[in-house]
Amino acid sequence: MRAFKNLREFLQLLDAEKQLLRISDEVNLEPDLAAAGRAITQLSETSPALHFDRIKGYDKAQVVLNVHGSWTNLALMLGVEKNASLREQFFEFVRRYEQFPGTIEHHDGAPWQDVVVDKDVNLFELMPVFRFNRGDGGFFIDKACIVSRDPDDWNNEDLETVGIYRLQVKGKNRLGIQPVPVHDIAIHLDHAEQLGQDLSIAIAVGNEPIIPVAASMSVSYGQSKYKMAAVLQGKPYPVVRTGKGLNVPWGSEYVLEGRILARQREPEGPFGEFPGQYSGGHRYPVIEIDRVSHCKDPIYEALYLGVPWTEMDYLCAVNTCAPLYVQLKKEFPEVVAVNAIFTLGFIVIVSTQRRYGGFAKAVGLRVMTTPHGLGYAKIVIVVDETVDPFDMKQVMWAVSTKVNPAGDVTILPNLCIDLLDPASEPAGISHRMIIDATTPVWPDRRGNFGQALDSPQQTDEWRKKLGAMLKELRT
Amino acid sequence: MSPAEDGKHGLACPRCRSGTIEVLTNSPEENTDPDKYPAAFRLKPEDLAKFPLVPTIPPLRRS
Image 1: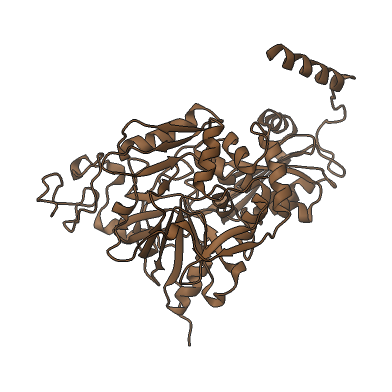
Image 2: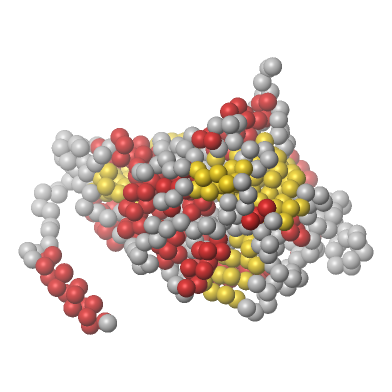
């Protein structure tokens, strides 16, 4: 287990582990950065982060991309074996998650307070913002941790949330924000707007690697993301309080302080989004930035977003699986593992023991009523406890041989879904589907599963023996 | 510098042809010609009013 004090310390480790590519050629902000961010995840599942420090038109700008963009970088972040499999990372993540809550460590000052701009803020000059995809309606800040609190209970640290929401840079100190109703910040904004008040927020850009992971988790309302980050890194999470009383990560590179303007909406988008489609345009809330603080020679962090797989798919993989698993297991201890790594969990695969016939469908229904499942989990596949949900060869075997569509496919009409799901109609409403790919058990007697195949005797011994021989052969 | 003065920008927004425009920054990948803007991303003023309003604005609480 390992905690990193800031982004720079993590980049040093990535460098030492040959997981950081430094691009020393001069590059254009557009389209080079987005193109490189797209290309790096097309190369491998073990890709490095990218660091740029010669950007045309900027004296000292530094940009990093793909910090979370591989299983290897995520393993290094967690401080586990560099080649740890997704399954191993999942169970280690769950073990830490179950220690919740950790503690928040308050500091009086932080390096991001070194440079303060509180007059004539011009985000275009202060940050090397750029467009990711050619149809984007503007420049977006897409990997910022946004901190908000509930105006009805402002001093309650547990109601403070940290989330990643896309921000469109619409003016020198003006941002559009996408707080879709399934996000906690939408609750805070709703309360502020009922009071007719602006909602003070803080936006932290360029962070040590664990807070973006916690920020993009669907935890229960009232579970502090900082206390989650603390258990994930095995150490209290350091923060500094802003003048408005919001906790901001101690290690951030940039901190933007401002307000979501009460009861205002403006056109926003389109933006190339995680389902591999542009979002279209919406009338979303607007932020005015009053103050920008940053470290000396700050590092700007972003992620390329587009047709999966991109950095976002790695960032929102294990941290999407773990809460679903813990929440499901609370009521159904038979659940063995949950795979929700595809497209933010629009499809979820659960392996479970079956208490009795029909049980798998009940587990599938419960997935859809978890906090994350409310907006995702459009398709839930349930497999036996002997099937590894992280191994697609096993999952597809189960689906192809255990499913009889006559009784194993359940369609639920017109449920809620993230409005970015391009297949939803109207946006935000979709049918959902449970595919029961488990072996029927009493009293469900359908199918012909009486003669299940197992492996020949001594297969386990031979696997160990051959595995050792293979290792020797290849070293 | 006005958009017309810098000689690089058109006189209308490439997306919706609005005449109210302001140069905020310059990019090496600019597309300022409304006729060359990809058709799927063009907008008419009436389209803007039809954009879904998200999240909905709640009623004010009675004090």
